[in-house]
Length: 200
Image (cartoon, rainbow, N blue to C red; front, side, top):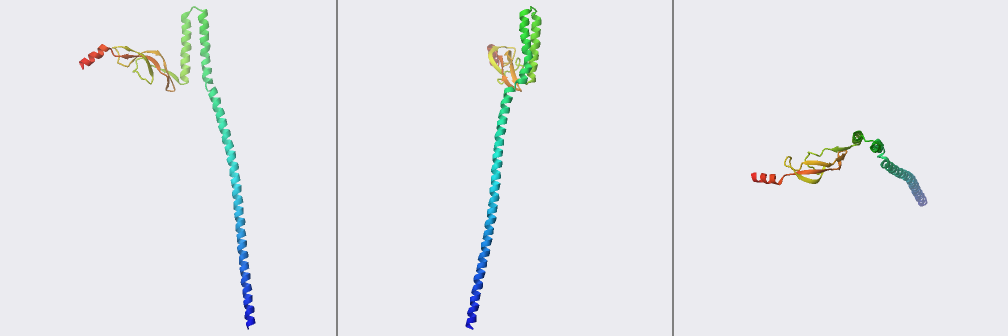
């Protein structure tokens, strides 16, 4: 009986060992599967990273090319921005040259002045088409944004700080003053000023 018991125990031990080995084998297989899965995921991520790097390099190259193209176009634009404006002015230069030639050859001063006035009128109209305009200064209240006072004169007939004379025209380009008008501005007569103070 004891021998049978020993044999059974031995059998049970072997079965347990076999089970443990199977369990270890299963664990090992699962572990290997997990490693394989992680390696596959890592490989995919590496491929994605390489693809992203490639795209990033391509985008960087495209951006650099775009910047260079914009810079080239900007330089070209700056170089030829006044081309149309210059073409519009050429006929007036031609007319002025003709006027100078006429002044040398003719004594008809009135006709020459008329030609110069027509040229000047056309010149101003062309400038206006490009946004360059003159503005009226004489008779206006002095405004340092539009006027530059060269001198002051006493004048009892107008209010103080009124523009009496325009010595040089002022100009705006698209409503921005690029040259203020050079003017003479009125001031009150000292006697008048004293009388006003006395009356007050």
